[in-house]
Amino acid sequence: MARELEIDTYDGERNPFIEKSYLGGLRSKLNMVLVMIAKVMPFQFKQRLLRMAGTEIGEDVFISHGTYIDGRHPEKISIGDNTLIGSQTRIYGHAATMDEYRMGRVDIGDGVLIGTSSIILPGVTVGDGAQIAAGSLVNRDVEEGEFVGGVPIKNLD
Image 1 (tube, rainbow, N blue to C red):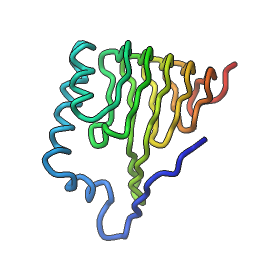
Image 2 (cartoon, rainbow, N blue to C red):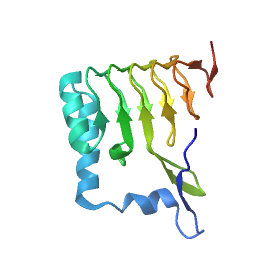
Image 3 (tube, helix red, strand yellow):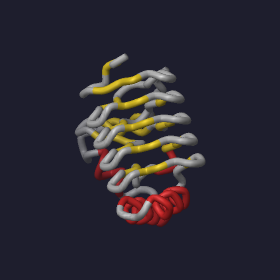
């Protein structure tokens, strides 16, 4: 079930992405630094840094090299137990267009496999045991045990 996103609209005077860049203070900047360092660290250190930034990460999770967790809103990301996230994957808790700035939680269940170079957009829930093929754009919820892939994702069962 898709969640509603928090949406700020563009008022014509300033791009919402630029406006949001100035908000958040010191904690926001620290989170960005932690997430960027985590991107290149071995997985044991990566998880510690991401947790310090506010990301919820379960037990026995493997986050491969080059994976990017949203640095602006790491607290909006939750990863369940026994999950594997392939390299170069990007998980976002926010998205910006010229008209809007959108924020939403991303909840990844237990026992999930996310293939290399996938992109997960804000407001998405990935159910327990789901599998996402490499290179996929996850723009909607993935049901428990569902196998999806493509740009945007489609059911591949």
